[in-house]
Length: 343
Image (cartoon, rainbow, N blue to C red; front, side, top):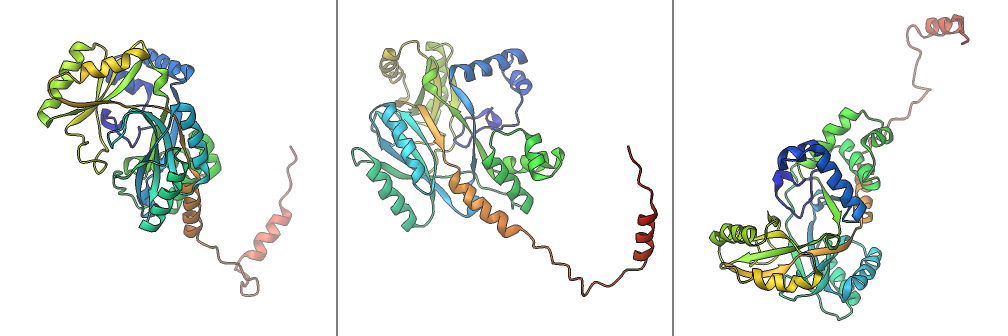
């Protein structure tokens, strides 16, 4: 579902069909459809969230990591974040901490404006931490947006933010445009990185664990990946993108992620210990997340401001300056003489 088949922090392509997925992975279309249906039924996959590129507003994005004790405390913290301005999304993570701390934390993404706004948000987030400790802020580097939005683009983006799961036909009725026009503009927004679709998933619902493996060198990545597939059949290695700027040690040339099957939560630590012994592996951490939430209000307000700014006011008609046009009297007479047909 990810563009190019590469896992990325910046989401999936919502236009991909089950037929295209089936062709890529070598399955029947019905098998793919059944698997996605089971994801929804088991609570692993519960839709897509829409995330506009902060570059549209001339801003960047940063994230912080707030330690929590258990997913319940993490879910409470996610609810409290609703009252802070400039928070984009948050999710509960298990084991992944850039500063080297193992445990559970809440990964919070926020808009990166000037230094004053960023310090104010960091202070507010630190007060929400039960321990007062926090990792970051770390700068995220989204793909550059190469699209200058038109007034219709802003209207479409605003409708998507308010109704992220709505069918295109419903959106076209709201916007007063054709389905073909909507599809063309929507494709430009996706392909030029104006908007991202982030999967809303709960990895704890699957019988597997997500691992991030940091290797000693770029040459070790392929060897470790092959060794992992031999010792743990059914594991799915994935290349990572989006680590640039987060930490000097983590980048997509020396690390990769892998979904490794495990049928017992008690076997996870033993699995991490065994994988860390593979030659070439520098560090292994668990990278799974549970409850998550997107906060579209901040972006929706800014989009509404752009829509209002791009509206072209229609000049008012002044009847005193508008003289009669040639043929007006003849058209009026014909209209009065035209018979009314009753059905």
